[in-house]
Image (cartoon, rainbow, N blue to C red; front, top):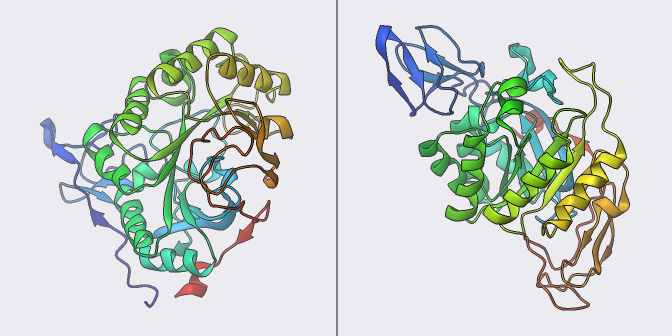
Length: 364
């Protein structure tokens, strides 16, 4: 394929006309009602010629081969490389965004490279990646593009991973996740107050997405909660969140508790103390979560995977480097034979902590 022939503005499916000549976008619960020429809050979906279009199809940036644990996914092909990329914009307005340079960007120069779906899939294959990740910003807002990339990857036996906040409407959710093999979902907090005040969204649609993933799909998913001092890190909230996860999603869904660092519009907060992360992990394990992790800090114990039945260390991690591996080829504990939930190769991957920037134009 030659560069420069990709159609970057494409029609979308999920919208309807409302009063006053506006069009309402139905991809997510934000339900932006747009006049002709207006963009949604996400920046990439707009009303053009009385329909909602995606304006950034095939325009991406941040191409890089990462360890899959960086997504973070600890139970999905551990130790393997994943081709990561994102676009611009987001359908939430998190004041604490840790990827604000892309997710909050409204500048087209952020989307500096053309990236046709088949070229992305071919690049992942040639780079030896087991999967691709839609990450850095919310893949739901570039829904049509993400689905086309996932379809091209599936032709090459490459898995697709969505790193998402799960803020999506019921109907598009089904088609989106039918093309995904795994997801890491941000459960940003467990109060409506937090979601409304600090993200501009609501909690219930995210919980609905999580229940949908558990009850209606075979998508492997893990949860991440960025713990912000004084906002979502109380013992009470962590008790309620972890109890809800076990009761509604099951004990086998891994939970990652990660450290906040001052960013975007939340520069007045301090970074998350290490002891807050270990407290959250302890509460999760106490309430029956089988696999709980700490992130964004150096913590070999909190990074490692243990058998939930006998406590044997199954996978030792030092940041993103895997060392001890005590899983049988069919994913069971070598000591007691209990199955470890997830998708595992017969042996540990050896990608380690490497980060390989990629120029996609080299694959055209």
